[in-house]
Length: 126
Image: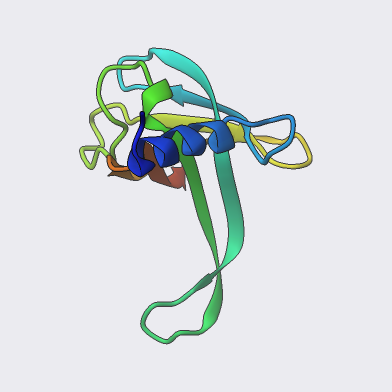
């Protein structure tokens, strides 16, 4: 019999990967070695953010993706790579109009209790 924590983790995977009845979208994850994995998860790309210093709404860009850790088979957990001479983790997904965007991972925040990773993204230009 599974405990509540295991049940919550299983439910999270089902929610993140439900394209038919949920909000899941196709997301491509590429590790720094160029290995590609096609996943499903949540994506977000908004242009209004709150300035943490003033509390005011400002124009900017905040893109994120949430993926189940159990579905990522690439080596390692996606993370930001500050060294510009190294290849970053890349995330690609389409917006609601079908326009494709490629982002680099600025920060990876894994939740190992539930088994997800929340990725903060930056627009990527090679």
